[in-house]
Length: 186
Image: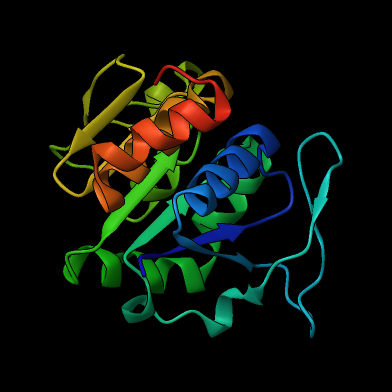
């Protein structure tokens, strides 16, 4: 079974996070939400509009080798926290070096920029953070795939982003099955 981890911090963008979790789980992918806020059990994490999610584990418990992909959701406050978190800083290079996938949507490519991971990479983001992505080859497509890096623009592209992740991990046939089940045309 394919496995994905999503680090979550206060201020995450709910549409992006819940859409990705839902679509990946519909595809039969194991999704683990890892809270960066701490606590035992992990403390609930509050999104940008006040919706709270309870993580499955803390970021301290995440081992990169247990996962095929890491997905960084947007939300300005949440991404600022992820960019400064030393545990996220430890994990990202392990995904990159281990030839695993890294996916980031909305403001989350700035997390990758903060850790020196975007130079020469083709990517996209929410337009409001474009200037923070110097060194990258910026593209305004709704979803951009550059090798094992997948990026997308924001809440309005969350379904396309999630389906791209499903296609990478499970194949186009699974995307078509989910399209039919949720009445989507992605």
